[in-house]
Amino acid sequence: MAEVTMTLQKTVEKLFAEQKYATVRDILTTMNAADVAALFQLLDTDRLPVLFRLLPKELAAETFVEMEPEEQEMLIRGFSDTELSAVINELYVDDAVDLVEEMPANVVRRILAQADPDMRQQINELLQYPEDSAGSIMTTEYVSLRPEMRVEEAIARIRATGVDKETIYTCYVTEGRFLRGIVTAKALLLSDGQTKISDLMEDHVISVRTTTDQEEVALLLRKYGFLALPVVDNEERLVGIVTVDDAMDVIQEEATEDIEIMAAMTPSEKPYLRTSVWDIFLHRIPWLLLLMISATFTGIIITNFETALAAQVALVGFIPMLMDTGGNSGSQASVTVIRGLSLQEISFRDLPRVLWKEARVSVLCGVVLAAACFAKIMLVGRLLMGNADITLLVALTVCLTLCLTVLAAKCIGCVLPMLAQRAGFDPAVMANPAITTVVDALSLLAYFTVATALLGL
Image (cartoon, rainbow, N blue to C red; front, side, top):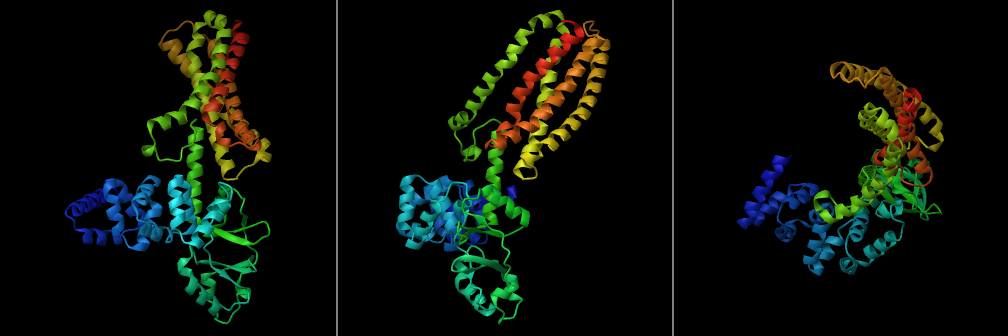
């Protein structure tokens, strides 16, 4: 695909330089809107206005939606009022809302000024819903049918209004705007023309409220395999639908946000290559400062046990291994639990079961790691390297601490994310960096406690 895109890029650039615009238009009209947008990203930005104007009206609107906000803003600033009006009014309402949310205020005013009154009203209505809610990502462009309609009337209505709807595969049966049921296009096409919609519709409809979190909406669409999910207000009146393509965008956004939080970074909405060095610095430095300060506890613990370390220098060499193993063990547990929480496979009430399972896993892991560590210490450290300071008691101290560290790390790794979610925070906050800091301190405390007991330090 990369080679084809590169070849296509060179071809378009050559044709553009030769001013063979008709040929360029013929090439672009055979492409999918997403591929056209990807191609535009590879071309010089000063060529985009001309190339965009070569696209047919419908393809231009679809391509515009797929473009990056920076490119959209650049095009908007170069559009005439007529061109801007043509593009905006060709968009689906939810895409127009996304565009408005991405643009600076002066550009937004121009967009709203060129939108037709109906489009402008719908945009303003959707902008009033809470951010990251079902209302903020829904579209109001759906097919509405009445229960008393017959199939032939319904099909005629779809033909008359379906062109401007985001989806016609699922139609919504309403009565005075109240949602009564759903009926699929397949059911309509395979039924007798005189059959009433009320006899075909499914009246047990799964819907969400306008205030439902967008991530929960995406999970419902994935769970039931729907192409769209109806959105109702507090009085059960149908106000819009969330389609599967919007749910996929939500899942991508939420996954990206979780990954960034788990890596100790403030989430960013811009692609990496389009984010400035300064912005990346600002997103990373707060967490690095916080973690550096929190690591002070580790230094305090080591300082308090300087006498023990001076008496048994061999203990120092095993500190990095114990801390790394603890951090890795905690990360394994936390990532597993965070994923389960995100997919709603587990909840806070499952904490005892999760803790018991991780405890058993940690015992198995700890025993295997301790056995391997003991063999390595005695064979490599004692025999091959001839280190007389490494005694049997030193090896036992390290291995016992390793078991305790793995147990503590896995238990902490599963408990902290669940407690964070229970307290109303994103469980991803309690991922690798935070857990590693806690586990490092506990592993050192366990290490020196066991060493003091076994070695009499």
